[in-house]
Length: 232
Image (cartoon, rainbow, N blue to C red; front, top):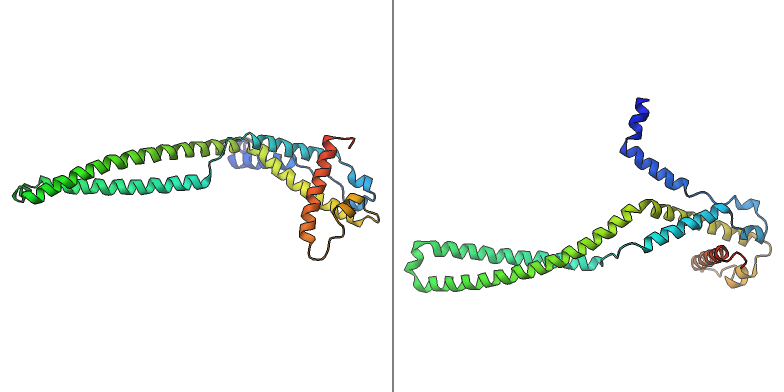
């Protein structure tokens, strides 16, 4: 009993259980196709496959509600600009420290022209320091906004990771179903017109990958339409 209690509080076990729940929510939605022999049976959509479509629809709904994600290039550009302005600011501040140190030496008064040049450079560097600080502040503010948007997006995805992961698994299972169905339609002695003529089966030599992609898309659209409009 102690071992069981410990397992219930184990973080790793909790993650494993969460993954198991996701996979249990994505059933194998069709019996082997060698048991099917007619277009009517292939066209049939069982309850398990309907459940997969519901998982996909729910994941799509959740994904559509995610906060906007900033353009990664914008974040990269802002980070680069921030690094450059910080470097420029540090260089100016270093020059100011060096100049102030030189002016603090008593011997600087023995060279009036040199001291006057140092004072002029110090005045210019202090103005430059103000300008770079303002520029840094603006870039820092923009970068903070971009990071806040990115964090909100990432937090939303983390919060809904179970639904989104179940949707991805369901979509993968549906794709396997589509491939099995395509194989089933291809094995029929008299494939339906949409398959034979609409998709152009069999595909010409060398066009199999493109044909398969089109067949998957067509089959997905047909089955989704059949779910949305049962009398279609």
